[in-house]
Amino acid sequence: MNAKKAQSFITQNAIYLVLVVLILGIAVYEPSFMSVNTLRDILIQSSTRVIIALGVAFILITAGTDLSAGRVVGLTAVISASMLQIPDYSRRFFPDLPQMWLIVPIIVAILAGLLCGLINGLIVSRLNVPPFIATLGTMVMVYGINSLYFDMKPNQSQPIGDLRPDFTNIGSGFIGNGQYSIPYIVIIALIVAVIVWVVFNKTKLGKNMYAIGGNMQAAKVSGINVAKNLMYLYAIAGALYGLAGVLEAARTGGATNNYGNMYELDAIAACVVGGVSTTGGIGTVPGVLVGVVIFTLINYGLTFIGVSPYWQLIIKGLIIVAAVAFDMRKYSAKK
Image 1 (tube, rainbow, N blue to C red):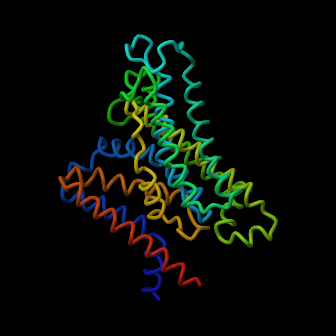
Image 2: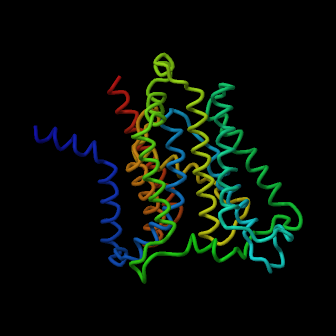
Image 3: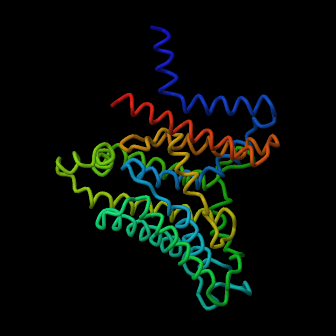
């Protein structure tokens, strides 16, 4: 009986145990890893990835996928950065653009992300194109649109820099003093996580999302407008990618059309490792958060102790395969 309880505990909390083992293993090898500054750096690096992963989670729970996430992040990073350069910069993207309220370019970028998500939702729900193919197509198209925008005169594919201090402060500013300060970007990510948790657990849209992912045909029979709900979910995901793009530009102080490249794969992997089922209908916000932190720990922690980036890729790949295999095993057991 005790053995069964132990096995059940490990099964239910495997993701958290992996996180603890990772932290302890790196800390034993390099004790200086356990510092407030390290934790702060990990949280900052995780912030935009968390927002992207939460957007992807909306889609994965419906038994879909979204390969366009990273390119939407890149597009919205370029859009926001192009409108928020300092007035006296000699290579301004828009030389004659007057300085506007900070919130305006941010909203424009988020709306651009929402539009991309809405297009994905229309293609999937109205044209009945499988999500993998639909978002693969939009991924390529968004990158093309972003590259054309980025190549416009007078910029002509030059990295967009010298952003306004009030904008970059969002990515680098903090509340408090010294090493115990809390970065704004971390606070924003936490607020987004709380809002998404509420949508998942306390709204009709969230309940419909889980129902669609659990059994789409049963959801239709029960009276759920699947097409309409999918459009809403893809649009919300796109808006989250847009917000992440804005924050990424603010955090790094610039943008290029290659921003966000492969971010969608890290987001999908973090979701899967965090317990979001690849078969749909299962996923939690805390699980997604831990999944993102685990992958940030792998990148940051293994670099911290001098492990080759190539070994890091191998380790990440093994974790992804193990997580999916574990998920499919649970799914098969239920059947």
